[in-house]
Image 1 (cartoon, one colour):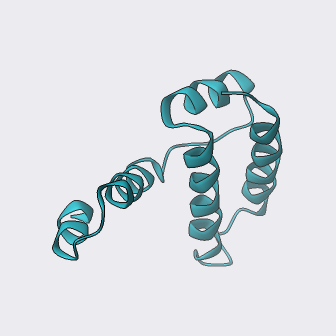
Image 2: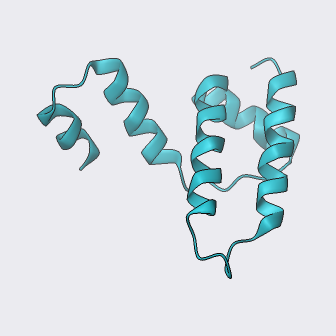
Length: 88
């Protein structure tokens, strides 16, 4: 669906690829395991991983406040710090 929308509105190929991948990976479970972080960095790249964390934070914040797990924000913050120090 996302590709159809982006094609219909004539977005450039780089934008289409970035948005498609962010949508594709937005539900990818994240945790603080350094081995998994490095694997994901190698798979999707540092910049895209950091953008993915931003999307996950926004997705979590948009959920019902009674169901929002605040500890997930802490995990995402810790991952952002770790990713910033890791060379992919």
